[in-house]
Length: 90
Image 1 (cartoon, one colour):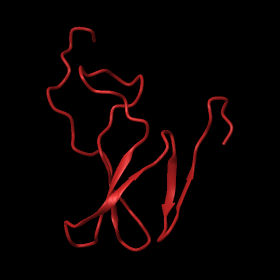
Image 2 (cartoon, helix red, strand yellow):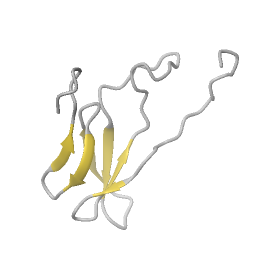
Image 3 (cartoon, one colour):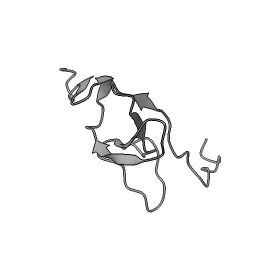
Image 4 (tube, one colour):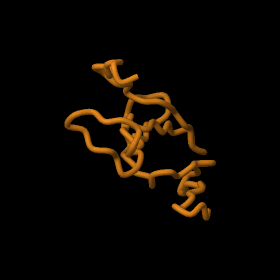
């Protein structure tokens, strides 16, 4: 594995979620701590999501969520998720 070169480019995003009012949530591709290293890139603190208006390419804003947060549902004014700390407590 040490001889395999890293790719020169990375994907723009890896997933897309839809909230209760049809907005699209697209996480920016980020480098997670300990995943791998790319020169000049710092690991992200948590995913940054770009929120898009339905059926248009209009960006409504950006939301940063904690690292390790598993999102179950995104409502009109809330995010329902679960995060586990370093000792495994939810």
